[in-house]
Structures are given as C-alpha cells and as structure tokens.
Image 1 (cartoon, helix red, strand yellow):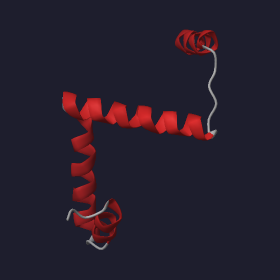
Image 2 (cartoon, helix red, strand yellow):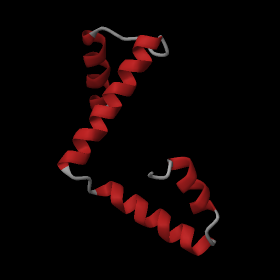
Image 3 (spheres, one colour):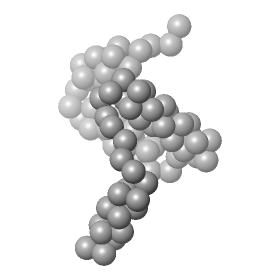
Amino acid sequence: MPKSAAQIKKEALSLPIERRAELAEELLASLSNPSPEELKNIWAEEAERRLKAYRSGKTKGIANEEAVAKIRARLKA
C-alpha cells in the first residue's frame, strides 16, 4: 500500500537538514517541467476542487463579463 502524503512528510521532516534541502530542491525541480499528462491531471484536480468549493458555498461565482473585465484591468496594469 502506498504511503500517504502525511507519512512521507513526517519521514522527510526527520531527515538531516542537508538531506531535507536536497529533497526540497529535487521536489521543486520536478514541478518545473510537468508532462502534458501531468498538466492535464493537475488542471482536472484544480477544476474539481473549485467546483466542489462552489457547490459547497465556500466560494461564489461571478458573471463572465465581470471576470473578463477584471482580467483586462490586470493586463493593462
């Protein structure tokens, strides 16, 4: 059975500081070049997370026109 993220984190935090730094560097480097399949999965998970937050009432939607106006304003700044 695969280890949970919490188990991996606990083990990683018990490593000597030099090894933790190496591991952190390796993990960050792995994020810089995700494969197309990984990107697809990342965005699918993000979309599911956002939909769940919306449906549960944790976030609220805004009109498309308002969203586009906000984006345009940010791009002009």
